Amino acid sequence: MINISFISQEKTLFEGQAEMVVMDGQEGQVGIVKGHSPLLTILKPGPVRMITSEKEEVFFTEGGFAEVQPESITILVDAAQRADDLDEAKILKAKEDAEKLLKDKGDQKGFAEASSQLTQSLSQLRAIEALKKNIKLKK
Image (tube, rainbow, N blue to C red; front, side, top):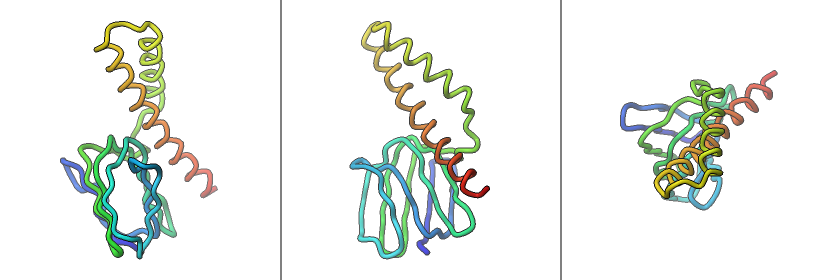
């Protein structure tokens, strides 16, 4: 088991141990287990999964940093929330709105905002999908 400290600006989101942590690093998805080589990585928006023998905790993060040592992981993020707290219908609506704005090809500011919203919506949906897969595996 590897020790995990998962901290946002507001609070500690997870403090404990897991068999594995899976997160989206800048270079791709990273799976961390006890004994991993030291690593410092930038996190992209997306799911962070803490996997234990009994359960899997899934969070959506808007990005941050992770420091990995052989016995521990420290994950620092600006903001994150549990995947089961995300509103899938609201996210799908935001995704559709962003796609419409991108098709309209308005001003540069509008395009950048729509692009950012689309990226965030897709990342949140990936977190929800990770949670749904976890629920299906338990059945």
